[in-house]
Image (tube, rainbow, N blue to C red; front, side, top):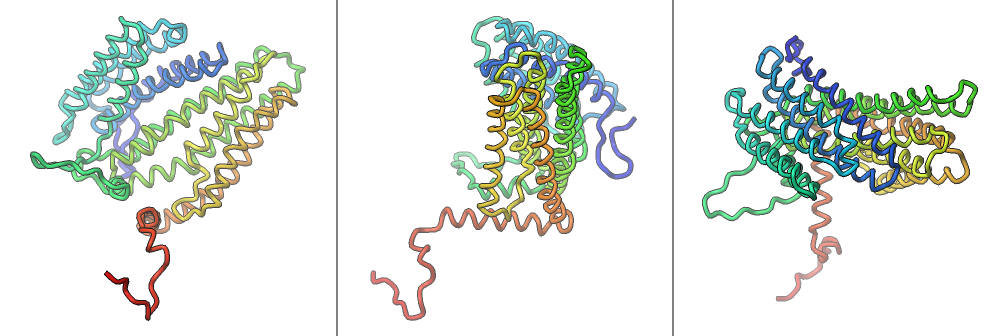
Length: 439
């Protein structure tokens, strides 16, 4: 298999990448199981930090293969296969991190970052300077290595992940003359830079490959929800009709979440990135950073549904499910109508997300499996509403992408003008006979 689509559709996901993802199926499953084992909000926060660590590890290999990977090169395949070993070790040690013993997990994370550092030092395509990324991963490896032997590891992990987020998917940075003071760019300037193709073509990312890569990862996370629902069937009697109703509801919810992402958000994200010429800053906003919360939300939903199907579900089960669904809806921006959205559209979106969270209060009058049924019905309703909103956005975007982007630019400029307009300008233009103020 080659990783370049001969039909012109862009780069394809390599077979070795799919094999690499098998390790993360187990890893993210361990994170979700950690929440189920101790359903408290402190455990959810710890699971979020653990998931973010695994997430940026996965992002590193996704970006590596997007820019320079090729299944036809033995070295590229070997780097990915080598990364499965420390990642597999880290997956087996996830539960020890929850128990306060993160040493082996941290050492494994250090090892995988050394592999990423070496991979970026390997000769890449001509003109692509990856030395900064290589040094960044080397620093992260040192930080994770030190955290394996000293207490208070979370501070070092946070610093390592933040600096990784700073050097991955770097965009263009304007060059300054020596002694020249750097001016902070305006919001409009930052927005324009995200839509402009990178001045160095070697920095561009392949939109088709990145969209497919993240889409496959979201499928894996949705699979965790399906596995959770299916596994619970092994422990319940066949004549429990309430359970079978909640089982069907869980599968319906998984299907609705799939529909929300792949029939609206995924299509728009890929088109936007492709139109920007593979701008790395936009790729970061849409994928690397933009998918973090909805991806973790799927694990939180899976944990909530799992707990809801227990014989004695905890009170937090409903909250995990509803808050996870609200995070997923917000993170995928499926209720956003685009730049032309009025204030009442934004207010309605906020109210819908708040109502999603408040469905957990039904747990005071309904059993947990019944709450799953209600939340699943709410997810289906949200899918129907979002499908109409995003379909119109896709039509506007597909009919004339340039006009669509121009409307965004106009909306952004008008918002910027309203924020910076002097108070005296709010009175409107002077009349024809109005005199100029005296000096």
